[in-house]
Length: 315
Image 1: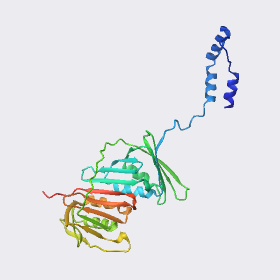
Image 2 (image 1 turned 90 degrees about the vertical axis):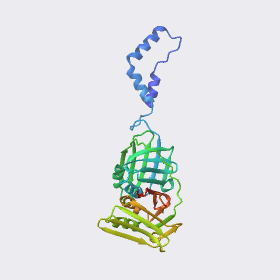
Image 3 (image 1 turned 180 degrees about the vertical axis):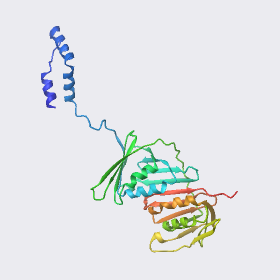
Image 4 (image 1 turned 45 degrees about the vertical axis):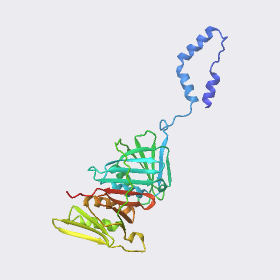
C-alpha cells in the first residue's frame, strides 16, 4: 500500500477554476501514460487470490473413520452404478434402484455419524459408485475422511488423513447429472421380524447359491428356514431362536403369523456383502411384500443401509 500512497501523492489535483489548457495537458498525460494509472490501480487493490475467485463452501463433513463409508460403498457397488447423494442438515441419503427395478437401496448416514458436519442448503451430488469406491480404497483402516463441495463446483473433494497425521491424500471426483425420483417408502408392519448374526446370514446365502437361483424363506415361531432347490439337488438351513451374551450372536424372531416367500438369491448374496457394517442383520417378511434387509451403520445412531427385494410370484 506504500506504492499506492506514493502514487496518490504525485497525482495532479485540479480545481474547476484551473485554466483550460492545463486541463487538456493533464488529460493528454493521462491518456499517454495509461499504464501508470493501471499500475496505480493495481497497487491500491488487495492481492488477488492465487486460486481464482472464492466459492462458498456448501458442504463440509468429516468422518473419523473413513472405513465406514468404504463399507457402505462396497455393499452398494454391485447393485447401483450411479447414485445421487442427497445432502441436508440431517446428513447424507441415497435412494436407488438396480437396473432391473427388482431391488431398492436406501441409505441414511446421519449428521451425528460425523465428527464435524455442515450443510448450508439441501443439494444432490451425483457420483459414480465404482469411482467413489476407488477413492475410498486409498484410505487406510484408521484414516479420517473429509468431504467438501463448493457452490456450483463440478467436483467434490475428498481428503484422507492417516491416524498418525503423517499422510494426507487429496482427491477430486467429477460430479454427474443423474435423473432420479425420490420415492417415499411406506412404513411396513411386517408379519415376521428376524434378527440374526450378519456373518451367519452371509454364509447361508453364499453356501446355498451353489444349489440354485432362488431361495425360499419360511419363518414360524420355531425358527427361520432358508431353502434352495436346483438341478444338482436341494439344501436348506434352519436357524432356531437363541439367546447369547453378545447381541451379534443372538437369533430372535417376532412372528405375528407364519410367512413363506421366494426371492432371487443373487440379490441376497449382494445384500449380504454389507455384513462388515454391523454384527446383526434384520429381516422383515410379509405375504406378497418386499423383503427388508437392514444393517445399522455400526450402531443405530449413525443411520442404516436398507435393501428391499421384490418377491418372486408364482404364475
